[in-house]
Length: 288
Image 1 (cartoon, rainbow, N blue to C red):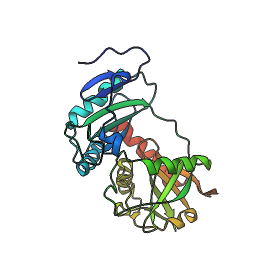
Image 2: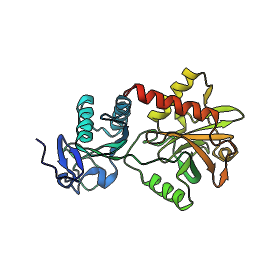
Image 3: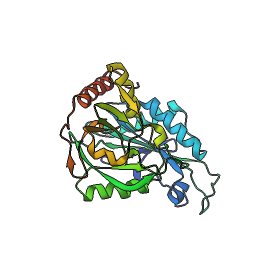
Image 4: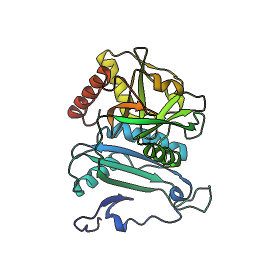
């Protein structure tokens, strides 16, 4: 049963119930809070339902399996997202976040037996600029780590790196990996054009298997755009001819410059084609 919600209050889906955010009481002993034992997905809704929900759910499944977390069934979670969207007065595109943690547990790394905490929340999607300045950061992604390629709530490195980018007047920070190769942003994947070739880091680089990344790769095939998933040294990024970011909230967003060095070809023809193709896809298919 859902609790009544006052006007202006945010609404969340919390362990099977639609509640005002003030009633969604998470235990101080929640293992996600204590240790980062949890996973999440961020989606965007252009209307009443989240875009590419099935792809996001399957990635959530893979990440949850690493932690041994149980998820609600796909249609249960889809319905939860739709309920939150319907109960939220959001003008324009909405950002939806699904978070699943280990639930109440002892004050250490060992898991508890209370069951998972599941929260679905929504808010306005941030307005994105036409292009973003980025910086590279000296912190390396560990492509061999236990959590490599999984979307977990252990986001401390991203918080530090993004704050460093904002302090430098940039909007995103780009990581290399332990091998010194280009990996990903704090919340985005990256594509570059080098010597006329469109390139993106392979999943073996440790980057997150982004939903938008996968859709853009598929669109490259449909449009006849030659794409290589190959390693590139992080140090080579500023010398690229052009580059763009992909993510749920950015879609396809050109990079204006790296480490204060602007790209000559910011709005490249390739980025424009893919951005338009992605918008067309989102308009015709809510769950591609």
